[in-house]
Image (tube, rainbow, N blue to C red):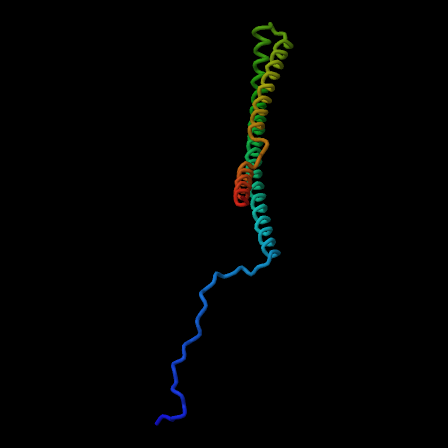
Length: 153
């Protein structure tokens, strides 16, 4: 039996819930600057690694080409010496009536022309491969700089 002195109980309603708010970034300015500088230094390290890889790849190609060219030149030179010696003796017998010196002077002139031609070819080959500029790394750095300047505006 209900007690006459107790007031009737009302159902209790929970307190109102505040609306959800956006989460605030509680990091301080120093932490943000640290994060940015850490990201930039990582980006710079990656660009340097790309440049190193690109330069070493180009230098390797230049070195391989130079080694193969030098070895081919040595063997061609040895063969050429034998051929030129034979031609000099042939000229001495057939053209200069047994005199030995004119054929060898003609052969020396031919050797100098061949050496000049080989030097020209070697110069063009080395010039085509050098300087080993890291083109991809430079392009990436330009794109990164462009992107960062766009974000600043």
